[in-house]
Image (tube, rainbow, N blue to C red):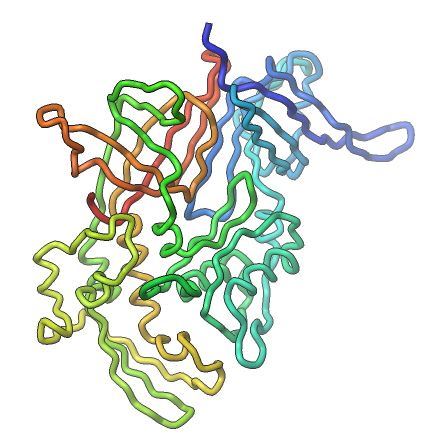
Length: 417
């Protein structure tokens, strides 16, 4: 008999109680066992700041689920057959489909999220960050998490060479981090770095990672489609893979992702400058999952320096004072950052693939995987499917009637091959 890949280790919810004799309120810790867990749904997303957990619970004796109001603390821990343990401390933020029968039997669908998400919604910041010559954006992110949210979660980050000095106009911490992500450029590394970071949460904590650094990672897992399983490997074998692509040309044109021009006036010395941006000049040096990939031939219509220029689809103007910033890449490339971030983001999520499997829960969002699919006629790798991808979403589902955890993975790639 095949061993289940899900074992509940711990599940408890803190519930508010009232003592009529002492006229006092308190909290009791209510444990739930595996028989009371009907369903578990778990969501990770590389574009989201928090993990979401949904539990469908029943209570056949006390009816305590009828007393849930929201904001109750919840602890959960489970493991797979290889002893990979996933543990979270969350709070209840929504209760749906609640039923209480005769005051004793109850069931409910409980939505849980990190306490940081609640703190974030209640925190609006109006203050200056990066006094003087500015502060690296990765340090501002650490400050927001540790000081503004007062979170004890680990922040895994790539260093950013972008230094900023700005005033937050009553933004919450996650909004500030999103704003910083579009303007952050990876520090160090080989070749030319482009703007664009991602901020997300998984079981290990928070991550503030550069898209350039993510695509340059080594492959951590291999996914084989309809191939014979080999012993003594940790390869994941799947029977189906769905690949879809998105390429909104009109959105790219409106944002100036392919060809744009920025007119700047620097109050430091009243210098006026016109700075063009062309995707055909930027793409060859952009870090990619598959470095040999080229742009489609028709992209030459957008122009470039070696193509005799071109017509910008978006014109932007900026009045700035570079005396506020320390000299460096940020000052020199200030006007190119948003165009780079827009096209970087658009290419990063250019193609999405999904697959399901029942196995160990040791995949992480942000990891690079190699997907192999062989052409049934030639026996060679299928170039339309095979290649390197980044894990972007993980959805795990446990149903008590099946007694197993199913994982659905969404992967992304910026190029074919």
